[in-house]
Amino acid sequence: GAVVSQHPSWVICKSGTSVKIECRSLDFQATTMFWYRQFPKQSLMLMATSNEGSKATYEQGVEKDKFLINHASLTLSTLTVTSAHPEDSSFYICSAGRQGPKTEQFFGPGTRLTVL
Amino acid sequence: GQNIDQPTEMTATEGAIVQINCTYQTSGFNGLFWYQQHAGEAPTFLSYNVLDGLEEKGRFSSFLSRSKGYSYLLLKELQMKDSASYLCGARTTAGNKLTFGGGTRVLVKP
Picture (cartoon, rainbow over the protein chains, first blue to last red):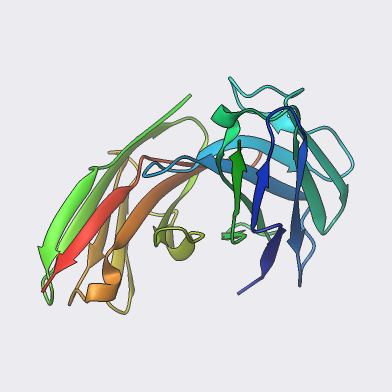
């Protein structure tokens, strides 16, 4: 299967700071990547669709100015949590898929963010 | 909008069979996915259905009925390592977005 990486795997930051999370497709190109958030013992909540070369599409209720997404190349998307607060502490997971009708989404290993 | 429902938790005995049901209501349906997720790890792909019927892959099988908005994941010959959360996800044609239900935690007991 395809490989998707995320960096960092975990991060602890102070309230008010910004945190950038990278998502990379290592062996394929992805024009679209997806960002999810997962709270403990809950399912994945889709936050936004990251589109290479254009603006991200955010799901209802997700603040675009809070969660900045940049998809500058076909293998890299970044999510920046701006002015992080303790309620932003969560597991952030990205996914990407190859082109094609049966394409499955491959998930990155996730980034655990803890805001103090 | 989309609505995907699956049971919160199920318990089964090692060696037994468990069926996880999933109902969905989504516009522009374009495929039903099942993923397995162990605690603290990323989800891993299990199966994909876009046409009605049963897809079998080893100990795991998945079924889809588009007219009923219904799918199930069947796990046979349960092993302790199958204890995990199982996520039902529906994909839409608009943007190829994959949206998940709440997940079903399966606990396999000896």
